[in-house]
Image (tube, rainbow over all chains, first blue to last red; front, top):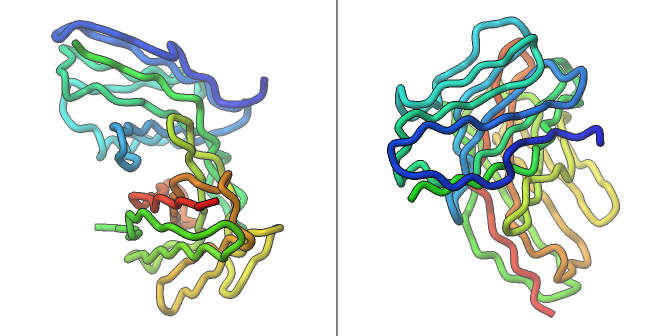
Length: 117
Length: 112
C-alpha cells in the first residue's frame, strides 16, 4: 500500500526496558511527525522532521525519548527505560513539505499501541 | 504558545440534524486549517482543509474560516450515526518548518 506504515502494531514491555517504534512515511513526503495519544485524550506532539533540517524536538517529554530519521525516509522513535506512564498509542504521520494552498495535509499511520507493565 | 481550542463535548445531535463543530486558534500566522475525524481506536483521517476566508463545501461537510476572528468551524448536514467520532481541528503556517498545531478534539454523538 501507499500509506504510512508503522511497526509493531502492538508492543508490550516491562518497565525499565527500551523500545523502538518504526515509521515508514509515504514515499516523497519530506515531513514526518510523531504523536502520542493516551486513552480518550488528544494528540500530544512529540517530534517533527522536515527534510534535512534539524528536527523540532520541543514535544519530547523527557530525555528518555529520542527519534531518528535515516535518509530522509524511515524514522525510529526510541523510548529508554520505559515507565508505565509511557503506555499510549504512538502515531506517526507524514506530509509533503510546507507550501501554499493547504495541500500539505498529514496522513496518519495506524499507530503502535505500547503497553508498559 | 500557539494553541488551538475546541469544546471537548460530547456534542449530541439527532440523526438528520446539522452538527456544528467549532475551533479557535491563537496564532495569526496560521494559514491552513484541517479537520480530521477519528473513530475510537483508529487513526485520524482528513475530512477537509481550508485556507481562504469563507465557506468550503464537500458533500455533507462545510468548513468555514474567519481569519479576522481566528475561528474555524465544521458543519455536518444530515448527520448520520456513522458520523459519531472525535473531530480534530489543526492549523499550520506556510513558512518552512512550521508545524501543525492540533486541538484536543470534540466528541460528536449522532443519536438514531
